[in-house]
Amino acid sequence: MARRRDISWRTRLRHLFANFGLKVLALALAVVFWFFITGGRQVYRELEVPVEIHGVPDGYVVNGDVPKRVSVRVVGKGRAILRAKAADFKVVVNVAPAEPGVHRFDLAPSDVIYAGEGDVHVDAILSEKVLMLELERRITKGVAVQVDFTGTPAAGLCLGLPEVRPPKVTLYGSAAVLDGLTAVSVPVDVNGRVEGFTTRVVVRTPPGMTLVGADEADVKVILGPPVRKTFPQVPVTIKNAAAWTVKPDRAAVTLEGEAGRLDALKAVTASVAPAAAGPCRIRVEVPEYTRLVAVTPLDAEARPGPPAP
Image (cartoon, rainbow, N blue to C red; front, side, top):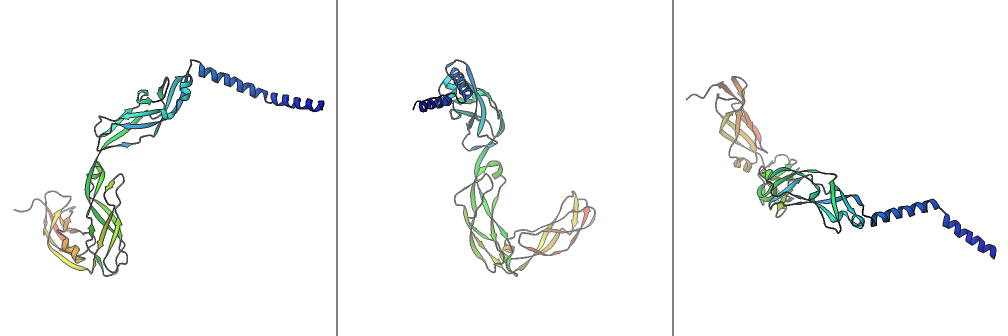
């Protein structure tokens, strides 16, 4: 019985002094940690804090590589610096009263707001010290819905002018983009079709644009047999040459296509591009989904000099 007690005490002592060096090191680290907590020395930490953009006027948007977070170095004493969390800070970039265009914003510690407790402040910005941001005006604009046909209908049929409802949609987005945008395209497949049909399509907006209202349109596709129409007095204009004359200055142009599409054509464009005096081939800008059948005459005579009075 006495021997068993002796073995038990030996086991306890062995466990007590096992890894003695590590236990002494842990105790020393705890003492140092407690010194920093209760002492008056300043402690530095690095945190990844969120970025917020303020002061954007109504009708404007900020473009550019805006980081979600910025690395900062914070400093404080005792328990306050240990309690500080990244969520207690935010970098505020105020773009007001900047005019539309690209602007440079230099970040400084004063741009960082601390909402926590205790004497903690930002010592330095460590990353993303400069932001290049664009302040852009946004507008709404109505643009046409344009049908983009894919495939070809059955042999002997031509595509007429489609009927689209609604014929226009309203977009909201960058003024710079919308100022040059007149239409959005919707794809309609007509491959192998033997008669007209109506289909509903999704209107897809350009990148960065928002569609105001419904995002669908109904497209009525018209198919018909090919017919021919002659435009007898098409003006022949001169390209790439100043103070030249061309004779004849009119041409007869015959096109083939669906009847309604040809009737809707208000004008046909023909031109010559002389490199030297003499005969020049008359070129016709063939409208979409029609075919050029004939041009009379094929050539026109180009001469330098103004037209005769």
